[in-house]
Picture 1 (cartoon, rainbow, N blue to C red):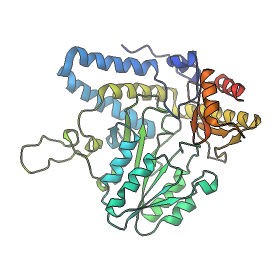
Picture 2: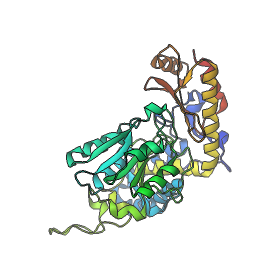
Picture 3: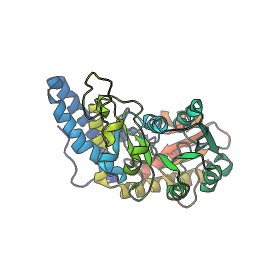
Picture 4: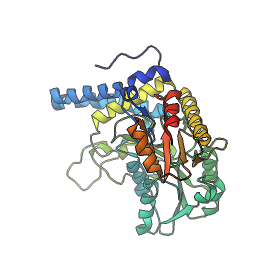
Length: 384
């Protein structure tokens, strides 16, 4: 049974759904988000169903996945349910795109030098197919990826640009509208790693013409590890082949002949077999909770706490690692002590019941909907 929902969830009201907040100031949504009681209950219900009934209800589970989970994930980003594929993590989605495009020797892809390794390795691995990875220097701009620097690397053989909507290390928020406009002008596909944004920021792919987008469920979605989704714009779907086909990706069974069955025309074409039902049930409950609160309200709350963290760290003499220009902020605030190592400070905070992460030599904090100004002030007070 699912726990009863509050009549109207808000950031303060939803805090009760996250037991971790009773003891700790958990400011690590950018690492692994905590599970809510709703998500845990949904997972338990699915596990109990399989425990007690085995395979008898597979059709019912599949119907729920199609009628509930896929549409719920689509609502998070303004997509159609048919454009959503279930994933195990963001990396799987990146590899689905990287290995599914019809590359030719001499093609190139553009990324930056501040991307999370997953959004680099899948493209660098295409070197074996004669594909060049061009890398824009965002470090030279203080951790900002300028659209002009992307444009300077695009030529007639550029097939795709892949950027993070929010950079994992410093929280820089990409101007994705301008990036998408550039790619449309140049006739280049655009891939968006959105794992540090989905669940915390408003995203509407109906107005933001990215071709592909991935997000794991375990960060700002506050879902289970080992879950996530891929968005493939309907108009771009034929550009992407299924590189790991299985029974889940085709519309009929293999007949024992040399013929390949017809692939599904929707997001199922990129799914190999039966999904992680328990994980999907937990991810669905987590996403429904965020949608009930409302992503506009969540974004305003998250950005407010992020600014409070950054401003407070500056007042204590820390140096900001996060860009803070107009439109550049996200839920992540990163900052450095002028002399003390960040790893030692993070360990000290953990002992005090405050969770942040040490990332690339900076303290990285990510406040989410279950956090309050008191959590932020508790962290700031504990900083040396």
